[in-house]
Image 1 (tube, rainbow, N blue to C red):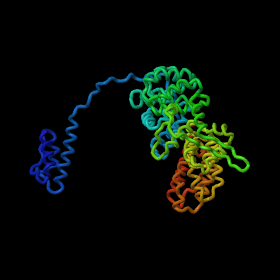
Image 2: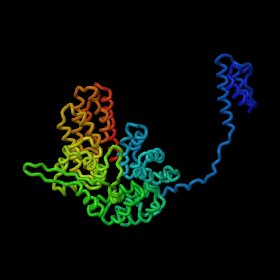
Image 3: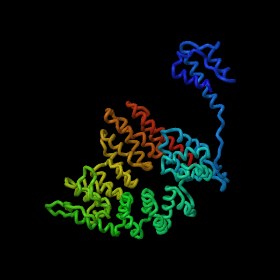
Image 4: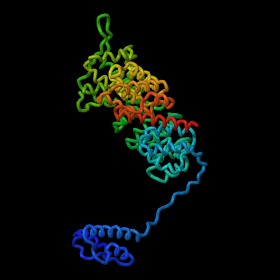
Length: 511
């Protein structure tokens, strides 16, 4: 097409050198004539406008004459819609779901809605299956709920898309379909093995042993993680063999699992070793109890099988690293029993101790491996109340009791610090605790705050995810709608907006 060549030429050399209008063939010329009245080239800015308009016109003309692509693949087998799909959620529930999908402020509470929605045995509209599957790609924890809510037809749709198919987590009679274990995605196989562990731990162990050698490291580690379900001494032989796995992640996970079995050979070796490194001396009338630490001078290669590596990370001494690793694989409750001390008295031994930082870090990791409410609560109050990981191992009732103590004893100027801690308590708060938090927010917002005391406001808006919806009216009464600082005003409005929405969505689902 000559006009296309002329268009490129004038674009390169400049329209000021264009001495003749563009010329086209056939029906296109009539449209080009409208850009060049009287068959002359316009002057000034109109010259450039004419060339650009011609470029747009010619581009559309070239596209219009192209033939549409023809499908050469194989169409999927049509969904037979059997068994009959579940009934739809109510229009109000569907409206709430659409708001989740369109309002970024509400997406944080979508997992709560999904969990509630799966209990009513209904489905979402088929048109909402694609956006939900896209969300499943971003958040693994919501995949089982989405799999259930999109129902059979949504699952059929997902099966046609390679990226969506691997997101589905089988629900219901998953163990009836062995093909899930043999051909499913990693997430499906992990869920299959998890359910087998709940019903028949020995059979689950046999399934994993049969495929262990052929699985990649990441898959071995994810499948082994389900052994925390119904873990028993019957698993020891297999886990002991896994201590020599070529993957460091698998070895570390195996050591953690074996540490949960107090009578395992691994646990016995670790405790025997540590009892030669740590020695408790009970005090008397004029003598304080103390913890004596005596560590070996050289690393023993035999320790490697028990997860104690020789080379420490940067900034940590070798001996400290050996001790920290060994301690992390022994439940802290063991030391309470061994020394006949309460968690508080055990932790008190670290006061001004030269190995305090090492032992403290090791016990913190051990509490994440082997949760112990009494130890974790004592650890938080004695050392650092801001340890996020330990707040998450404390049972909800214990966490609320500890947080209530902090709220009620905090002085006005300490409230911002205490409120910032509450974001670590990530479960649905009880009504009583929600009332305590509401009152604390009221106290906090009544103060005359300096700019440096405002930092708690960045957490306040997130409280609406955990406050009890039953307290919506109390929160609205206690919390002002405006504050001297715009940041706090926005956070307070977010609390009221989100909590009100949670109350409405819960009511819609339960009705």
